[in-house]
Length: 181
Image 1: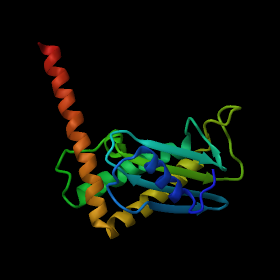
Image 2: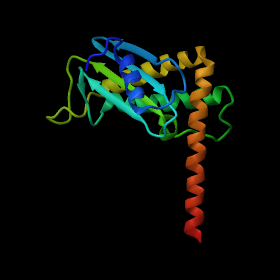
Image 3: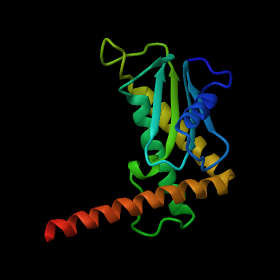
Image 4: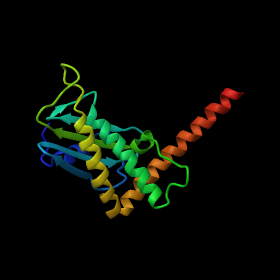
């Protein structure tokens, strides 16, 4: 794939293909590096109920994800929970799950590193543990800063995640009620 605007343009393209309504106009982009390793993430939320997270290592599509994708998933969950608690959007005891914060998310995670270690010959899953740390730290720091500077966008994203959380909880209660009967 080649997009003139890089992974930002790729995220925009993916959302256009879904035909979904965007929850915020701009694509959030964060990047960072440690030594020779580089990580970049672009993300945008839409009104759908599924997630699209596509990851790359050295420009190769890692179909099964890997450590870089794991780092992204845990970081975005932590950042949104921390932001919600800091500003009183999440009440005591409330916690958003990873599925809640990723509902309606379109994201591209791309890392470039010197000694890539894949878990199979098909290069479908990245195994470098340092990439998890790099992506997780970078997303924690930079996405937190972005949300602080863009309170409106942060509120829209948190409202979407809270709505997903409420729906999940209602489904769980309905399931329990049905089983008791």
